[in-house]
Image 1 (cartoon, one colour):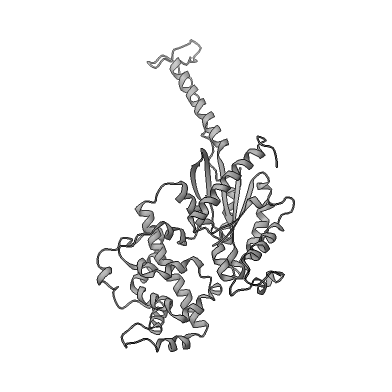
Image 2 (tube, helix red, strand yellow):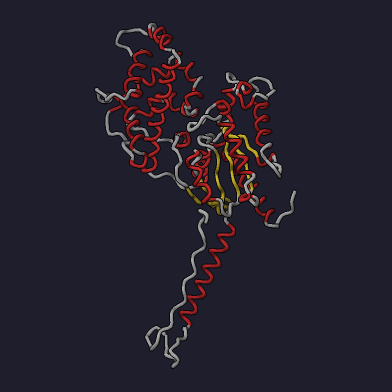
Amino acid sequence: MGCGSSAPAATAPPQAVSGTNNKGRTNNNGGGTSINAGTAKETKNIDMALKRAKFEEEGKIKLLFLGAGESGKSTIFKQMRLLYGPGRSDEELRMFGVTARSNIVVAMRKLVILLRDSGLEGELDAESKNCAGENSMTPRKAYDELLKYLVEKAEPQNPPNTSGDWCGEDWCGESPRAGMAANKDAKQLILHHESIRVLWECNTMKKVWNKRASANVVDGHKEFLDDVTRFAKPTYRPSEHDILLTRVRTTQVIVEKYIIKGTTYEMYDVGGQRSDRRKWLDCFDNVTAVIFVASLSEYDQQLAEAENNRMKEALQLFYSIINNRAFSNSSVLLFLNKKDVFKEKLQYSNIADQEPFDDYAGPVGDFDQGVLYFIRKFKEQLVDEELKDTFIHVTCATDTNDMDFVLDTSTTIIRSDNLRRAGFLLAD
């Protein structure tokens, strides 16, 4: 039994009633009833409604987003909402605002630990000596504060800065939907935003950032850290771009419907972590198309929940999906995501240095050759069929203009492939 909605159940016919009433049921001596014209009309309307529901169900495109955790599939799902769905309510915006603040704190917590474990405190001391004024916030002072309150989680001694731009009621406040941990971390941002800014902007942190893969820091949160002061202000309301960058782990199956060019799309987003994948099976029935999302930039990263290369995990997962009999009559599209982060990483992280991909023979730092290499890796996972190039997209899920084109192209391909499979179009 799948996650998709089904046609309404047929309404039971009216039961026989003896005697006479004022609604038109009359005694036929045998104890039965005759149905008057009004009841016959109601039955006809029910039949028409059932036929209409069946037609709509058969014409609907069921689209399933799959991929490993943190590949960006939920971001693409949010792009669908941004491009084709309704706006966000204040309640939703507050949830994303609290979560964005929490994302900053989580990222900085990981980076502080990485700085400490990398033995870079000495470089931080040397850099801090060049900061003028005994009372100024130096990178070392910022580090010590964040180590104490974000890592060691000591109870804060001072209230948040309430002067200047920090006067007034905080618009985001707390959000029950964001969860207890996110709300707590969001408060830490307001308390320690200046220390986060100072440490983030120092030269030592730039070295730490280049090692972020070992700490599983979300690449997109660099934009949050670059603009941390804005997030800490009480007037902060998340922008559409903030929402796209916000990391909210998907643990439940999320379903949304959109009408795109006259066609109804029922879209499913599911959690990508291993512990969440058992829920996928409930969504496999009558799937029109699968969009499998893999992050190009994760070729040098390890899974958060297991000792396994993330790109290797994505390839194994793609193999299990593309060759699954449940999708033998479904279109499968491959989105190789985070192309912007991939391009930046190639400047200091060689593909061939990663054990699963030591057969890479292309030039070091070459974006195009790197992309082609991983496209070949994914194509090698197919057993019976070939993955057409038109079904592969290299994407940046947080770029709305890029995704507008990609999603428009993809929905056209899905509609056409659906008609071809149904026998209304000739095969290529």
